[in-house]
Length: 241
Ligand SMILES: Nc1ncnc2c1ncn2[C@@H]1O[C@H](COP(=O)(O)OP(=O)(O)OP(=O)(O)O)[C@@H](O)[C@H]1O
Image 1 (cartoon, protein in one colour):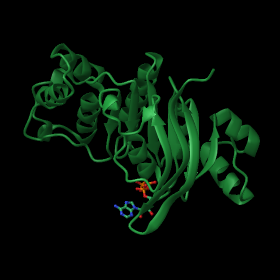
Image 2: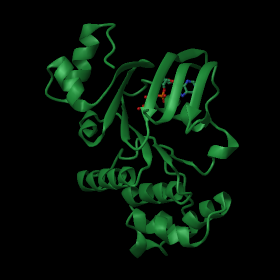
Image 3: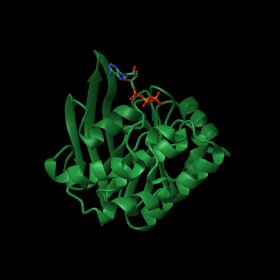
Image 4: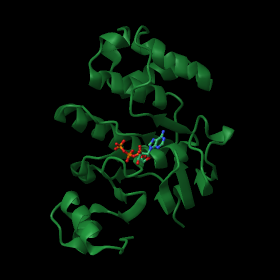
């Protein structure tokens, strides 16, 4: 039987009087890197917020690792990295990660482990305010990793990063999945599709496709994810699952 990290049933979200997710159902397999792709405003962040349990939901059900999204039991099991790195500039890398470790009740040994996982050991004592944008994003990621989560939810983690850092980060995601973790990673850069085991293409709050990249290319005859996305839009109502 397929093991799912996230199961969403008929999710409806309204924000500021506007229907952002009209009626979304999807299941995200465990142990994979699933890319949540779609243009700006398609609802990626809203869906991610629903998964981590911080989004007010009008109706529907979101289950994460078998529990309702936002349950107390999920606090340590789900790591969430928001779009803007939420770290303290005046604290060192290690102090930032230790702060999150303390909140989650994790042992001190986990702090250096998380810092090493994002390749920042040599900067562990540097104040975060003195790091580059890419390094700051990795501090955020270390804060999410320190709880040893089964599911990592990352909202546009590679935005603004140079190609080398983007590649390094995707390699890190892959290695985390190889350890058996589940990752849900949003991006509006379609070429990041090649890095994912599976893709969820979102448009105007609706799932346009839920498939692997090879399945998507075969079904559309397109050469890359971006053209496949456009081909699906041209086709109209049909959803690829
Ligand atoms: N705080 C808010 N109040 C009201 N509407 C919002 C709010 N945040 C987002 N929206 C609306 O919800 C829709 C989806 O936004 P969301 O941030 O989920 O999209 P996104 O795909 O993550 O976009 P981006 O790639 O630009 O981050 C947009 O139409 C947006 O205007």
